[in-house]
Image (tube, rainbow, N blue to C red):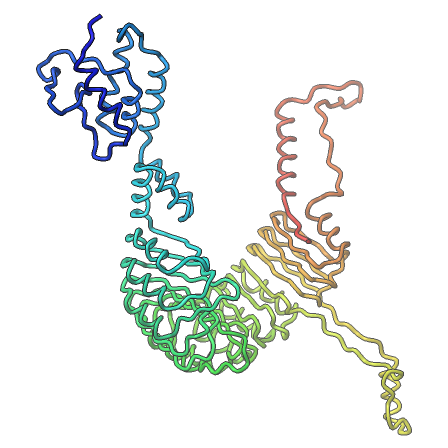
Length: 574
């Protein structure tokens, strides 16, 4: 057998060099021999020389595309012998497995890496050059990022991470540490095409961003369409001016000296104020400014204990024709007069939330009279002046209703009188006063309970949480799938009737055990015996049994399956 001394001398140098190659391959792409001082014989049509038998060539085939082409010669060498030793078949199998790994598309690798967190992605980028390229490609193509900023994370780390995502359009930061204007400057510098930005604050963390800094951020981001910021306790003055902003959510506002909005394309606004009695925000001026500078508003949510009839009248005078959802929460000074102005100006409302107001059943009747063809969600929680009669009237007069929330509205009202032994009556010599004290001492504490009857074809969710004044409930709602009876302490089990076949969730925390058992009995059918369908049937004279036909068995199995589907309901009582 002839040996090739040139080949052996050429392969000795690569064996001595233990350092990995960083500038590519120094070997010929056709025959695999070193390029220095080498004339490839395969260029003239001659046979390619045999490759050296070393593991170094197999390892090179994993890292460079050129060597992958040369590794295709290895199966051809299996029929020959080099230096009297046959080529082992195990090398061929390993080569095929390595080639299969390299065939994995980059797009599939990117889909796998998308499931990792930012910190895990940074660790994956340090595995090898191929993974680092996939991670870079994923950062460049990312459109949405949700990042939790821990106290150990510095602004430099967040900035370096955001610079990798220059094409990012939606960013959500969950701040586990205090935040200030430095974070806003980092976002402005790193993300020029940002469209939606959200800051969520964890418990006991402070948002130090001021009103001027937030207004400057909105003015510099020309493409910003959605802004949601929590913990805005340090905003004393606010002047938002943007032609692209369509959604604005600000929470924990307090003592705003002036609020100016110049957003002609603003569609949705949510302003949540703190529950402080000394809040000096002028809501009347703010409402007037909203109506004049934001004519395209469709959704308005304002939560403040300073809401009153004057603020509602200022909002209705703006005549926002596109308004569809109105939520004025915690305004205890809002009465039926404000309801009259609302229904007279906005006749196309789909959602009306007056939770925490002082409206009565008369206000509910006005709502039902004007909005029977549009209103689908009515929220009247924490309204102590409404009764079950008003809720029943709304269920009858509003056929499109899908949600009713009247939690803590039907409360337990009682008249408690102390006996004469605990508090003796003075001046008992007088006959009139003596008679009154005698009546008070003999009268026991009286409680007034109410019953609620609702029959509705489209109602899907009913919330009666905290309605301790209910002792009877009758529901006939075929589309109802969510019922909240939390803390209905006085609801009698024998006065509960549920005709709701599509119920999926019933919340009964804080209720009596007998009431929970009655709910299970009516909804889950735990105490109803299941009919036993036998595969055989007796003849009319009772002489013998005959086999039931197959189609009858299928019908009975279908009935069982329907019965099981109807009882798929969860009762939450913990």
